[in-house]
Image (cartoon, rainbow, N blue to C red; front, side, top):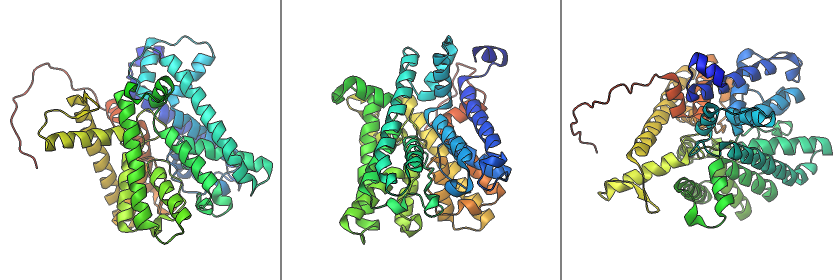
Length: 444
């Protein structure tokens, strides 16, 4: 990797983007094989590309039902792509290099640092081992806890397969499922009232979505919250806020006609899965307009930096909220937990928000115009794509070629990250130390 960088002079951001694109192309090639489908016929190239992109970008949007269209080989390719995409292509490559005994260069360590949003290069290999082992542990535990649920419906071998597949998919916030053998595109609607499955899947989604550095903080400092990094504090507090408040709304306004137990399960699952997981226990077409708008906002926010999740990230939402609060209070800086947020961080958060919002809205307008669909339905789909969520109102399989290509781009953009994509594709314009004259502009 280092030799390639020296010859071609690629930045770490270009390598991260390139590695994702390479895995997507390899996955597409494997899914194009005839024995990757149940019918034994090669799928259309765009179907294979869409599925490989959705799996690698841990999104979950599909154009063909995973359980009934793809063969056992095709499903194996999909879950491997999910595992690679969820833990990060660079993380997996680094892990293989460490296992093989290869010496890791400083440049390769810096790529890993950018990939998982680590604070520093020092200790990056130790952190990589922790990420790999921790991920495998949570996935295996999740599969073990899901096994009793699926054994009530399936024989032992398919029950084990379902448990492993859904544990990996949930932990990686991917949203792919094999429930099509019950009903096509049904996700977990058949298990909406199952407390056991709901609890396990929710925990896997949350653990996978809070970020690897937050795990490290929890492991190192246990319950001593005051010793956590500021980023970990923001992630945990914001995640808790974004789970509880929407769940209260869904409980009071969307699922009020259900029995109390089901009402609680539906509301909590909807609140958690909306931020990049992509499973669903409730038909999204039954939500009110307000419920759809709230779901769209949650999908755009997504998970946390350096996690298996996509979206703008919880820290972006937190920084923008703190920045607005500082303006309302006539403070010069955004502050939290006795710390001041750097102005550069606020600028980055603002840029990410504007970028995601404009892309999601522009894509929705274009798809609505091309397909002749309601704008709110298209906004739901594009928010799901750019937030790498995978929840749908059922229009994805019917989309035309141009619309599918737009969704593919949004999924890649959402998983790789807005700033990483921009830094990888645009040359740096930082050439001069001089600054242009400053002039005040009134806002608000």
